[in-house]
Image (cartoon, rainbow, N blue to C red; front, top):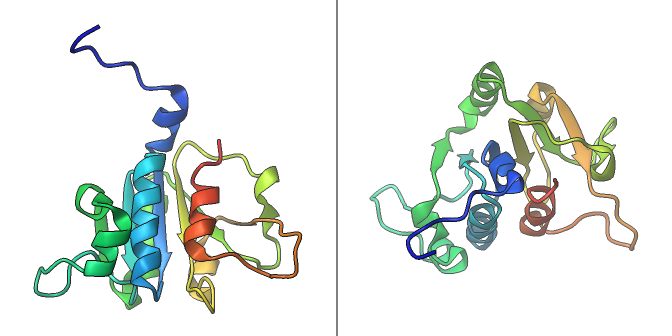
Length: 169
C-alpha cells in the first residue's frame, strides 16, 4: 500500500512509556550511544542529571562527541537537563505522574532483570560509570534491578547496560 503506514506493534507501543534518567554520566560518547539506543528502542524521553553532558553546550552549540555517536538521535529525541540538586525531586514528580522508578544498579535487594516485569510506565535510572547510582536516588527508586554477569568483570559499560535494559519486553 503506497502512503499507508503499518500499525505499531504492541511491543513498540509499550516502549513509548519508557524514560531513561542518566545520573552523572561522565562520557559524552556514552551519552551519544545512549541517545541512539533510546531512539531505536522507542524511549520517549531522556533526563540528563547532574554533570551528564548534554547535546548542546550552555551557548546552544552542538556537543560534537554526542552528535557523532548518536548519529543524529540527539537532535530528534526529547531530553531535559536536571540540575544536581533537583534529581530526586524530578524522579518524585515522575512517580506522581504514575511512573515506576527503577534503579539499574548492583545493590542489596536488586532483582535480576530476568525476574523483572516491565510496568506500563517506567523510568530507568543509570548511574555514573565508576560510582553508580547515587544513594539519594536509590532511596527514591521503587525498585532496583541488575544484569546477572557470569565472567570476571563486575559490571558492563553504561551504554551497553542501557541497550540491554530498554529492550526488556
